[in-house]
Length: 380
Image (cartoon, rainbow, N blue to C red; front, side, top):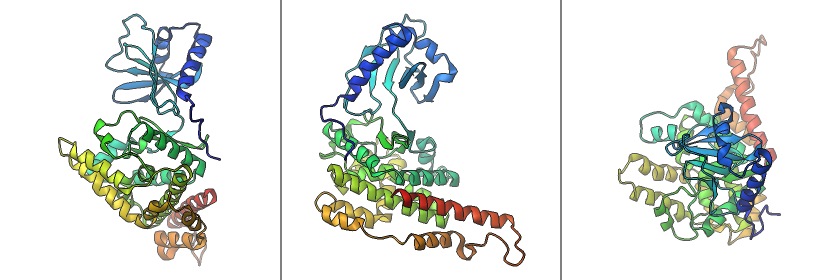
């Protein structure tokens, strides 16, 4: 059964009504602005900071956050009551504002999950794309673990994301197909959630309808802009693990697309990047690199991505493809040989039994690769 909300569900509007009731119960006032200072002046409550705002948890109220705009909030002003906002796309929590005032305070429903990038994505990616810095190996390894984690998410999580993308299509809004930090992975509730969908530039709405498809889903989950940059600095065994995990993600995206009827149009994502290049007045090398790296990504996985074209139209063929068997033992050995060559299994000296630092490192690499692959296999 698909994890789909009722078609007339207004989840975020209900969330707003619930917040008002909780505020009255917890704080004894209808004017939340009166108690906001005791929340944001407590350093223990800060949970995030962006370019324009700070975000705080709210004492006594789970599931909601307070945002304070850096350039607009004035503590010297009397507490201006917050007013309910008109909530676009109310069926899902995309990080929409529920309440705001004209003094820089906002309340939002907390989006569950952790960003799908372990570091500020723009900070390292733009430096690499413009040639100002090299991809740190640790960053690439963290990205590998993130993609392995996504590959282990159940198909219901992919269904949930695909339905959110379909809902964006109804509103004519483009999915951010560049920055994986706008995807939240929620292993506790087994969901993949999308945020910040209202911040995209207007020109991206020129993409033909339906504006988003499974290719966007695959691209953002696999960080297509930086994917081949990660591959360049990963070890041979890690490259094989990355490719295996990514192919599992592509398969699950395609199955979810079939389950919910999400379109497959390879030209949409390319048009997305072409519009970004066209509307970049500075003609930055970074925007050109978006399309170049996306093309390298699709080339790397061309056999898997080519199956997109038949997802909706030919589910029988897709079902047959799903039954293909994988020789996991052979895959494991190929991965280990790529990583360790003829040192596979050499976790101690054969003659003396002595364990050196090199043997420890060999054992650690074998264990890491084998565990990650088996976790993916078990969840598939």
